View 1: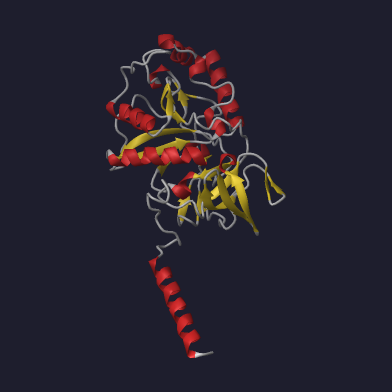
View 2: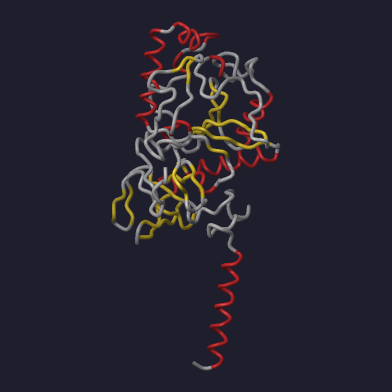
Length: 326
């Protein structure tokens, strides 16, 4: 090997070594605001087709775990096993913790739902595991990208951009964003509706909680396709920087008039129970491009991506995720 070529190879090796030293643990770098609204780049994040898609002529079913390589306009370059290709962004969901790891996630449907109706436990729902992914005890899988156990939280990629904006606004005002529900398979919506309806039929306290102040059961229980089934809704609250939740109008997932944002259906006047923190959350979500609903102070959705129909798929565990030790 001549001396000039040897020097060139040594320089390349040195540059590669310095690049490796600059990478933090986990092999990824924080993304800059100029690159993406996410705190981590989408490259390396788990993504899932929301319905069956074709990748280089190979059909992949909804929920198949792929790895994102690049987001460009309306398409995302993905990798699956030895295949790479481009899929329309509107056909993909991203695992939210992979791009927004600083949000606090407590996806209790994965290990024991806290949902109640007028404070009354709902048989088959309250305390039950409603999602069939993640570890049975914790609801989490070990995530090698984040080097910790974390929930799997699929949402549409377009909606993830708005969630990033909401999390940023919350941080600017001295809060942390906490999410406890996002994508909810359609069969889970049906299960909740049937169980809570059956409870209301025999429990006057639950019935009264649905009907007070002009509300009705339909405001609190979806009998059809919900925005959660379309990967374009989150249930969320705010936490202080100390991790404590400020005063909110009701407990999380309280199905009754106590959770209402407005005084009555059709009103735009805040209910008397709306606290300053809940008003802050509502204002920030609107600024991030989300729309809330009148009957739940915690629910926000993306009305710009309604093209996704009802989904019932289960997100697969991405390749390379080791088995849980628990």
